[in-house]
Image (cartoon, rainbow, N blue to C red; front, side, top):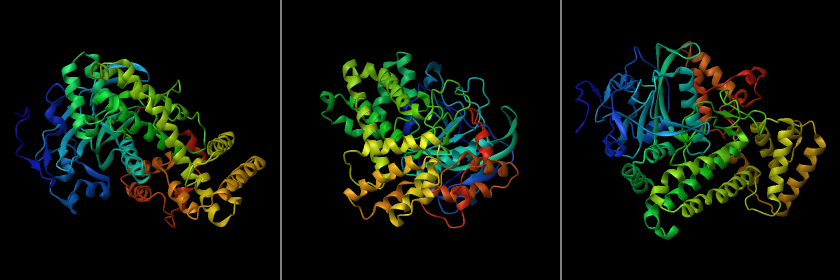
Length: 493
């Protein structure tokens, strides 16, 4: 029985819906409607995500779509809700949290959850307004699609809608809503919530739901004497390890890796204070709110393991044996270095592993860090070197020419030992030309605040296919301006 009365004024997006997470019941969620915003308008949209959802070609022209995706109309066939979870924030137990500004429309028949972020206050808002601002919404929209373009697991974004309604952060800003899409938005914190409150019945129901929906192989595995919950923890650990390897290889900083921001499916989720590195600084902190540097770039792999340990503690009542739980976590320490080295070998154009590869990788990273060389530009310039042999554009990035020449000699000798005719092509497919640098996002945001959304559309087109050359767009692949280093991104971003 729905807790919401039928809405006679509903928008039909052409999607069919099924119960999904909502079927777990009131212990897991609260049904409620989004809070309307006045005079909404389109800011940006992703046709790729629309196709993934199965929306019709004219989906933005359908009556009521703009209003529905701003939260002003109910979407036909849905019973919106917000979910409850808990978590550790900056290493400290924060207690009950939940979807404080995200409202789930439901799950499509195609198995995708659709969520409105910034749609108003929920029972889990903890006194906040439940709104998102234009700048953070544009950043999340663009980065969701940028990460997908890079081949990194991520939640997706269908669109951003805006409203001139004021939202108060450090200064008054305009409101916006992001329509987010994912197979699931379940986080580590959902499990922590029920474990912390000793609600083993709900904890088991949640674990069974996730295993049966997303990890069915855990039911039939021989691992851990057939313990499905331990196998589940191991599978999540391995997905998380692979994700972190991809983040580190592309130079992505998440900025707020709390346990409630960790996806149970190994997706990049909750784009707040994120950044792609400009100059390579392993100790870079992208979150202005992170005074201690807990989530610095080089700390991300260890933090992910710490978060998985919290998940293991939450699952312990189901696993039943602490030694088995620790063993299930062990795969992270195997998978992360293996996956990271594989990603870095691809960036170097190396098809097969060989002795000495780790030293080659560590050597170039030390060179980059010593002079804070632009990470994306270095790798992209190195890529065509394999085809034309001209190293000067890469060499020009370094003051320590002798150090770079010594490394380049080792790099060339490694390729000579095992020539690979597609090395340059492999590098060009592994080293993007375009990433969502902070200054590019800021420029698009500033234009959008004046109702010029062309910058959002241009960036989206580049970031959807970041490995392509895009003639005429070279300015978007250049060095950041000096003012880029003054941009401060905080938890309100």
